[in-house]
Length: 335
Image (cartoon, rainbow, N blue to C red; front, side, top):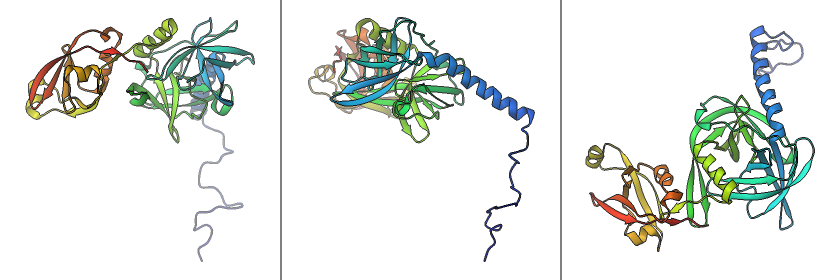
């Protein structure tokens, strides 16, 4: 019979094979640990006063999420799915106060919403720029997972450039450049802050992607335009074309002529949509819109902005090996 030692199990007075836990850490180890702790604690101290715990009542069912104050007069960001189908609720502040909040606007296709809290002496967070993030960079998440207000977790940016699919009615969209982090996120973290080491908010936590993986909508130029529109008008206007598709390689001859490898192949055209009325069909590959190159779905999404609503646009497509131009007039997307 094998001995316990042969099985690798250590009991009693047998010395451990690893480092002695009672042995003092080296100066380098202590400095590294202290530096990490200092960053996380400083971010937490700076940002916790700006993070809200939100409680919502839906048909006798209570749910919750998080929010981030971004102005001194009470405007706060959260996830659109947190405040879906409600006009407001109760907000719990880090200092123990409670206040009512109202939903100012929401945009389910970016999973962002703006709320407003009625309270004095509010502390807004400083917004950063997610475009400056790097894989491996330290980030800190603050929110109210499982109802535990002001919970702080830390991790790193584990990936950038992810896409988050969203859907409202017949409309689908990919939220671009989503931040993936291994900072622990749980139900209730949605709408909370993801901050970099200086305490600037670079993302709004939106989803738990799996064990040890969380996703956050980035704070960048695109999302700031959405937030600004939600604060002003309560909505963000998009143009609607009426196609569903994905990237598709171009035939080698066409790719050489155009100097690019992909286009967006139309997989479905919604009946009665602007694309259908213009004559676009499933199988067509969109090459460009008003002379702007389209190589992926994100390119097409960026062009379907407020300025495109009601304006005639020339869409060049590849059909049966030949390019053709179609005049399309997008309408406003409604849920």
